[in-house]
Length: 345
Ligand code: CS2
Ligand code: MN
Image 1 (tube, rainbow, N blue to C red):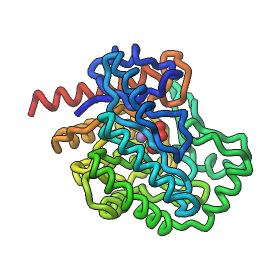
Image 2: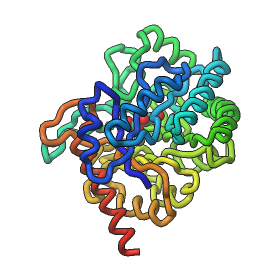
Image 3: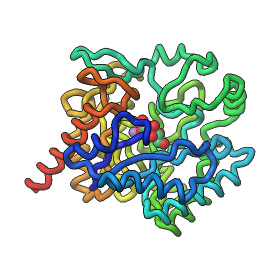
């Protein structure tokens, strides 16, 4: 496996110089942020990003994300053109030697939380999800925005998008996903780029929008939509783990050959559809991180791993979930478990 770390590009206060000092981290997960969703990434831009990272002695391992345009998810408008652009992106990534792409198929909103800086008893700040609060949130109010969301919509744009989605059922979303995979995975196979879908976070419907990458059964259905190694997964323990019915070590063992990218983080379930993002260590949350890492190791996992969100600790400020310190501790903790498993096998 290769231990990687997410980097948000030139403006990220967590610089490549800092990342390369984390013991055992050699790969970077990044994206190209100045190309509008739906347009193809040019080879030139990809090579520029790659060079910047390699100049610091690291490798560009995964692109997270190449976002999927809403027309593709809704199955309307210009979807064929956007799918064609997606294929062009995959071809260009392959030319640059990148072999893994993370994406998601969540309508409109990526990860969602009710508070970005909730103070935990030890004084650190974490992202939390409180069901009551989210049920009261109105995405049309215009004053609501989370770092994982696309902020390019105007209030009216958002209103018409949500209206259009109100006619889309879960089954429609499955059909639109299959339409996308049938066209994109063929190209992924050809150029040998592994596509790795990220599960929905949280793994249930929010704001009345359909969500489908939520459970073992649904992931089995997803993998069968296009049965190819190139139609794979980003298995995010913290996203799926928010539903206590999801047994993450079991999912790792069941889907291992199709998992190309592992997001490993812990969460503490505090009630029905309520959770706090905790430190990575097993005892800090509801997920057994040791068992999760052991499942990967037992399966001979040779893909990419990254610690996922971290808390804000030691007075750090910045992008919620993506500070340096707690994620670095997470990477080193996972590396420690991996080394111990390797040496005691
Ligand atoms: C990430 C997601 O920050 C996060 O929770 O795991 O935003 C992820 O990058 C996307 O869902 C992948 O497309
Ligand atoms: Mn994740």
